[in-house]
Image 1 (spheres, rainbow, N blue to C red):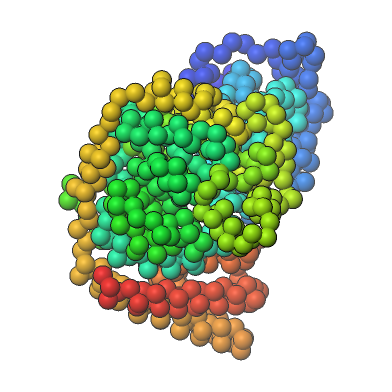
Image 2 (image 1 turned 180 degrees about the vertical axis):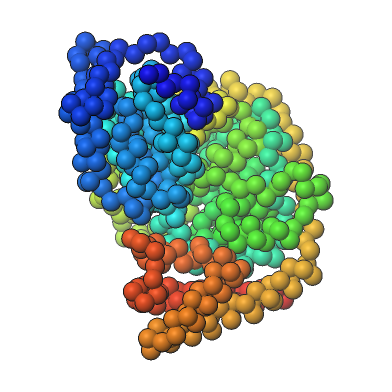
Length: 601
């Protein structure tokens, strides 16, 4: 019987279009000993590969899944579909809020499954997501969307090994892509766990700046088809930093904070400097500088003294922090809300990745990287003359060469990779993750991307040419950069101050109440009493705006308390105790910093 039309009714349009153009697969469908169909495929070398047990494919699927605990998983990724037995078995055991993602490179074999088996029960499941015949980049994009921080540790990958043997290179790339998505997510989670409280405090401390300065989003799309150069602080910048002078006024010079002093010492003033780091050490990149004619692009989490001491134009660059999203509800811009000026920047961990997203969102083309080593050529960590060397020289006080500090910064936990010239170079795994993020995002970017670093490991999707050549070829016409940046002035926010102050005061009161009920809950837990009241307290905590706003600052605690099953007050007293303690502390902290800033706005 041909089940194709019935199955096709539940197939997404994107997959359906692929099925319309595929030829016949080199496959044989035949009954197994138990009666269910099995599938044999002839690979490119003429070898016959059985994708399922010739005896009992359903029992085989159950046996494969017996190796995994899927009950609490939120994302299950199945590599290889075959005739769908494993996917059906997974669908029968996962919860309704779990995504089952099927990745298979062969639409022709998928079509065989649709023709020979009734799969409507599986295909109409809202949990099922089909990535059939998709390129690696599309897979990365999709997984990046569904593997959110709260799901990061709840992902399971299941390999259908016979399918993998048919297209080993494809699946190898997919596995690496999945690892990359998880590593990037883990890095973001680590940042939130380590700096969540500091980010929250800095955003609130920076509130007077946030409500007084234009949002970066006001410039998105306003620099179309004009060249931009992202200046990073890699050691290779020493090779070509002087060439940047020829690009001044002919390209938008976007400098990352770590490279700022090195560039200024060569007599070159960038048009923009971008900073996203919340730590006090980041202030050293700006200390003692007068920068009236440089524009600061700063995330609200950045160290507050950077904002306060910067004399030039300041633009607010949100990365989507939940507290910043709450503040933005009280801000409108003179040029109208249609511009969506508080659209977030996207980054992959380093300030240079945020600079890249800035360049493409303003419409720049080409986007030229310089100083983007992502590695340690000649055992150096940064360009000479930057703020790190400045600080290290003070620490050494003539007791040794600054190269000692470069080596100390690099440390010993390095890996060896090939640079753009095929030579071995040392890097950290974290930098390799930044490289992979840039490779992914460059592949999704319409603009021409050029690596003019003259070193480093950024290779995929970029033209590799020397900086002088890139400037001569792409940066030849004078640009009205001051006029472009001045456009942001039209978007200075008009904050609804009365409503903002009133809601902050209400939030301070609520934060105090949440702290009190958490302390009450801790007492009830200690005395093993009144679990009904605990459920009432949990409802109050869940519904509070305070809880939503502090979620980032307690993310590390939330992740460590992740249960295998739903939390139960009586059974999980220790977990609830730690959670109540964390919420009480975070609520107290939120109320305290809000109280300090409310009279300053």
